[in-house]
Image (cartoon, rainbow, N blue to C red; front, side, top):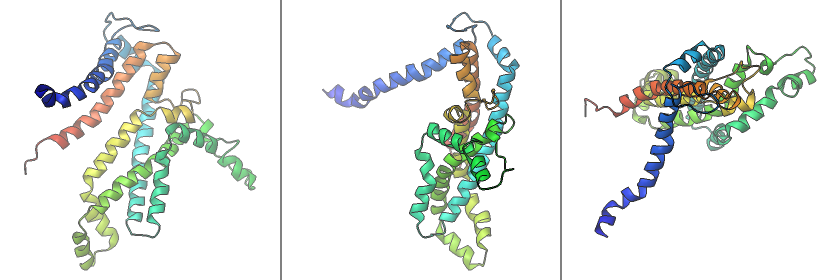
Length: 290
């Protein structure tokens, strides 16, 4: 009984630890192994070097997916942070009905990405959504057909993703704004510094860690984006809105090419590591002033 009392936490956590070890890290290792084989519909375990990675980087569809990732990720992160910061500053003015507005801005985060994608698919459908509504009001020449244009369809995904994520970013920034020492703000106001200068020169620079955290979260969401693309465009027209996650899914379940799916999954993981590891290092390293 004494041994059990001392080791109850370990006993309780052991099943979860084993499950994570097998179903997370074990399958990561399995995927990495498969990415170095000639696996097609069924896995093969004979190593074949970097053949799958050579095929991956020679595939035009993968080039499209990576280009789309940079376009989507860059616009999604920047626009979400700009809108989120603007909304946070607006709510920080102690306006009336702040609770109601905060709930409205946060509401999209309560929806699943499938619901968001489906709703925006209706909104952007030229025959049903914005274009049809405006033409029904009398502007017959109005055109908003991004959803069916290969060169513009990726921007519809940006619109839907920003709509869903900007409220979450607003909540992060609002918490940061409310944590700023009010004495500093009052002293700046006494010195006659304009409000916009107080925010740009004093408050926002002190929120650098929150900006970094928001960037990490949004970048992670962008890299693994899948549900929204499938619901909104299905990767089309053609494969014009493919992202790495949809490319991986298509290779694994539509083309029966496990080797390509595994190699694309490993590249996605490397991109995530390239973003997360420096962040963790900066947060966990010992501070010189401590």
